[in-house]
Each structure stands twice: as structure tokens, then as C-alpha cells.
Image (cartoon, rainbow over all chains, first blue to last red; front, top):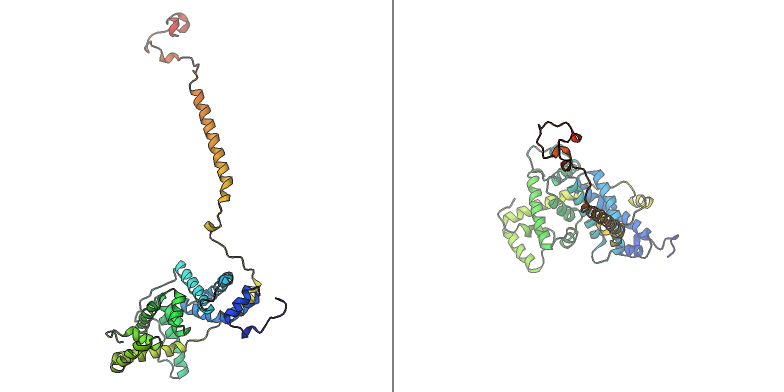
Length: 190
Length: 147
């Protein structure tokens, strides 16, 4: 393969085609995969950890781990699912090692912003987003993971199972419990 | 919150479109007659709307360019995986040499143990009790064989 000229329009390729090109020696295919997925992975990690710097560092770690393991990747699962599994594992390891995982019980005097502060719909939307972000960080990590993968990443139960290493039945019950927990934290605030 | 209804998981799964076939039909029949499940469904849908309103945060950097500029080391295996048996060879030789030297030195000391030491007996352990007046070894106080 000629490395000096682009072999094709990268954006037209599917993820698995980029991976196949990478495995045949076209290292630039990985750059395209990074560009496609970096912000999605970053957002997931940001909402999981609640810390921008931590999320940026973990995103970079995820991509480096993916790069090192990409030669052995097989298209049994989607590339994004595989990437999220790496990201989730990296986040879990980091948070547990740094003891940043906090299972905080909801308190009535928690510093939620007042949802009645702004009458405009836009402002209410921003308020709701802040409320939700604060509420998510009060959930157990396993609940936060499954909610983010379903509600934000819109993954199917099968895909969530692949990311978290769970059976679909477990995903179903965990997701239901996570939603109940979130509703309990947000009780009357939406 | 509908905490009494046993269909909580099904409400959640139905919202996600993960109930199929007969299960879905059965649940829809139940939902039509269960105010608790309808209320919960409405709450979960409100939550979903809130999730959609979460801001789209970006990294703000081209990570691909960052990674290209940074040399990526090959995957580092754990220390125990990096260990190979042939690394034991110098250590084995050193251990064997040390052991041999120890055995040699020990056995040479044991050989000397049988040799009779030629140490003159001390007068203070003489059979004559203390207090006896003695003018000296050479004045005939003691029989010569006891000196």
C-alpha cells in the first residue's frame, strides 16, 4: 500500500473497514477511528467520572490501549462496543484505584440548583441537565454505567451486555434498578 | 413511583423496545389497565427527555494528532510475563558456587577439629587449692609432673 497517498476517503469507510486497513499496515486508519469516536468516549467518561481532566486522560488511555490491541481485534462485536468496554474498564480501574468511587446517599440538602430559577424553557433545560448530571454522580457506579450506555449512547441490551460483560437479563434488571434509583434521587425535581 | 407493581423491569424494557413478541403483547395488555405502570412509564419518559438535554461536551483537541506525535510503546507485559527461565541460569551458577564454597570451608574446619591442640595447662586450674602459700613454680612447692 502506498503510504504517501490516501487510499480512499476515510469518512466513507465503516469502522470495521478502517480496522481491516489498519491491520494490513495502514496506520492512518486508526487516526480516522480516533476522530470518529474520541468525543463520544470522552462524553461517556466525563459523565461517568464527573471530572473533565480525568475524562480526557482516560480517553487518551483508552485510545492507546485500543491501538495496542487493534491488531488482534476481530469483528465479532462492534468496534464502538469494544472501545466502550476498554473505556469502561479503564474508568473503573482508575476510579477504584484512586478511591474516587463514592456511593453517596441522597440528602435533602444536596446542592441541587433550584429548578424554579429560570422561567424560560431553555434555562429550564439547562437546569434539568445540571440536575441530572448531579443526580447521576450520586448513583452507584454500576447504575451510572448502565444508564449512560442506554440513555446517552442508545446501546441495545446486547451491546450493553458486551461492554459490561453481563447477560442481557442482568442488563434488563440492572437498568430497571438504576432508573428507580435515579428517580428516587431526582424525586420531584424534574 | 410504582413500587408495588411487579412489572417494573418490563416497564423499563418496554420503554427501550426490548420486549418482543408475546411478552410485549402481554405487557401492553397489562399497561392498559395499570395506572401505576402508566405513571412510571411517564416518569421514565421524562427522564429520557432530560438525558437528551445533556450538553454535548467535546474534548477540544484532535486526539489523533496528539497520539501521532507521541511515540506509543509496545504493549508492556506484566513483570511475571516478561520473566524467562533462562534468566535463572546466572543466578543458578552463583548459588551453586556459593554453596560449594560453603561446603568446602565447612569441611576444612571439621578436618582440623580432630587435631590435638598443644596448649600448656594453666596453673590456676592446678589441683592445689587457693590459699596455699607458694613461693613459685621453681622453688619445689609442686611436684614437677603437676607443673
